[in-house]
Picture 1 (cartoon, helix red, strand yellow):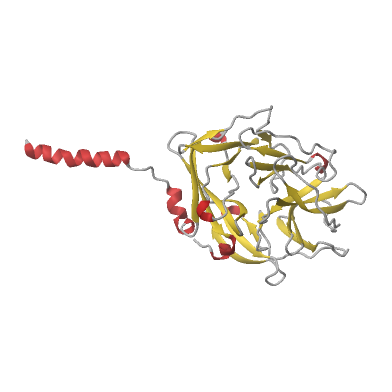
Picture 2: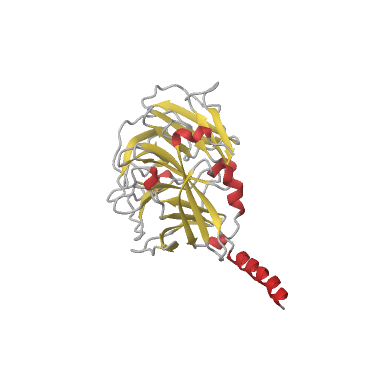
Length: 369
């Protein structure tokens, strides 16, 4: 009998160890080579996004850190964007005791945004995580591909999820006719936001409003300066980016089955057409403080040097993201970092886990699988 007891005990112990084993996430192995080159700065678990069971994609945008060095960064909250066939939902989650809880909307805030009328090549909604002040702040920009005079900009402030309509259609000449918009990381407290607008005078013209600031507290947009009139195609949708360091604008359009990227300086001349970055052949999603243009089209991260290569716009790096999501670029102290999120499906139905990573922007060209 003693022998039998001796043989049973290791089996029980082995089963106990199996029962306590942590869950297996294949995404971690797929991305290990890439995330090993980054610094993990947070994990949020137990996230149950709205309509998560119907989602075609779930994204996590962490709250902008306020630490002065990377060692002090600990992501414990952020905004979750859930996309379905009909709409996009956003919610704010914060972690307490390791588990995330969702903030409740207040003041009649609408947290579901319709995708009706969206152009398949352009995002109908763009999300800018603004600098953190008394609240975590998310700026939502809706660019209407049919009628830019109905485009709008709104602010979401963390736990209250208050969404004041900062720009109603046709009431704010700075933002009502927006056809393109983007943010640029700065070391200063305010964000640098730039917009491309349609000037409603025949023939159609475009203007740029650059150096707009987002304070994230009272006003979403504070007016910028340096208006220019580039000779762009007569369209209602552009992907627009501005580099305030170089004083260079970029506008990308999807035309004849391919992406075309135009560029011009702050005060352009008036040629019949603008120069084209012929090397940029994929959708641009951000401009980095280094000046590189970043694309995540098709799940591949590509970096383009707008000043390099024949015809300009040379691809300087490309690697498979493997499910890793680009979030944004932000300064930590005096150093800019690019933030990524890795979504993991939890064991419990409808729950997600998000791991957050950061890498110095200066090291982006060296990343590889």
